[in-house]
Length: 567
Ligand SMILES: [Ca+2]
Ligand SMILES: [Ca+2]
Image 1 (spheres, rainbow, N blue to C red):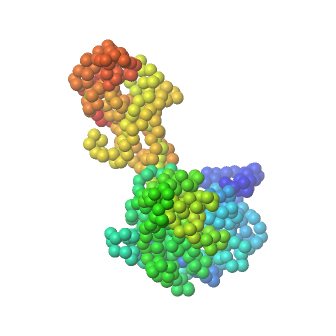
Image 2: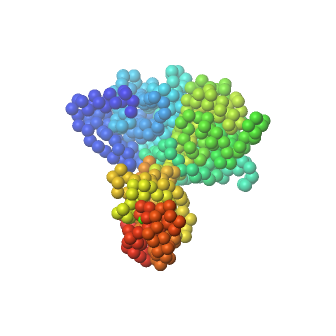
Image 3: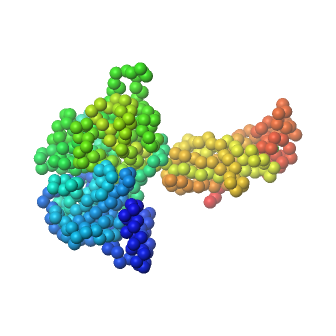
């Protein structure tokens, strides 16, 4: 929250007004009663994809907006993250100008300046144009989504002429409505280099629900994206949509000043296979044409370090401070002649904003890195072989948002020394209902535990697990395997107690039986360092094979893996 918002909220609270809590979805709002509170946003059944495909700029905007229309558009604008120091949203209405308080979903009086263009307009105070751009897109798409709701249609257009900064103008008037007609077809035959499958235009999601649960974060599981996911993300970011602009250009999922489309041919993708340039036009930059393909960026002349590797993700991570480790990066570049133009920078934000919304709709997350130093820009160009005239402006990291899973298990043996709580632990995460002894796990992690602060458990952290529901198993070197079924893992972190691991399984199979007893009896009373000592029979890890170990074995006699742990 910005200092201004914090102060405003504080002033409202200090005036003795009560505050009540309201929940919507998983989002929690504080509502200052008697503030100029907006109604809750309408949740439609319109998909993110249909809204993206149906967005277009309308001109000569007019009409009068309802509070509900203001509510949906402003709420959407406020859902976008920002990465600069601040981003304050102002709305100009016929009654005056207000600061939008996203926390309270309410309006705070700012000035008597009334809207002079359209039914209402939004302007941003911000450090970064990129941040304004990220917020433009959800606001625009929210107006598209309203066209199929109980409200009358809302049209929109970003407008820069005559203003110090580009504003987002809205009108309440008829529009074309929603379409799922697909126009972004790939010109390359299926299976050949550069081919992208058709993106989906009719996703099974609600735009507002997706927006309420945007997956913005910096911790990703390293699962590579499928070509279908890549196709969807690139299309959402800068793909052709189902309308032609008034100057005869094939419209995109983003607006552009005079349909100039500053990022044409300067969006790059880096994944495990290489670096690719996205093409939404064919041939070349003809803006009346449509395409949807990628082109591999060949490494430049071989330098002293030898040929550029295909997978440059590690080089990017080293080159850019604060870049998360992700399976896929989209590098948004501007031709050097556009650098410094407000609208070009807004457009990089449009692409990033759309990618975040689309990624969230298909279960992926995004992170934004902008404000690249000139050194970082050069290093990115060198790592990727992007042309020198294409200046990197922002990097969108994309992948499944990962959770950190704190696992704890109890270990048996009253005489277990502190060092005996530090054990190798194999954790596996399976699809629910798995045969955990035979199926292949979604994740397998070989970790080392430490003794918990309370001293009664062995604990470890599993990272990189995609949120979801899993059957989770844990097994030590000479224990049976425990399984806990249908564990719900959520980001950023989830704790899982996997119960007590049963000792006595010296041979590491799935049962405590005579074979284990045979191993133990052969090293009976041996101590660590002696030739006949066997660590696998020293169940309590105290350095000697004795009655304590035998007692653990007999206590678990004929028990077998997997031991089901109930919540
Ligand atoms: Ca055994
Ligand atoms: Ca022992």
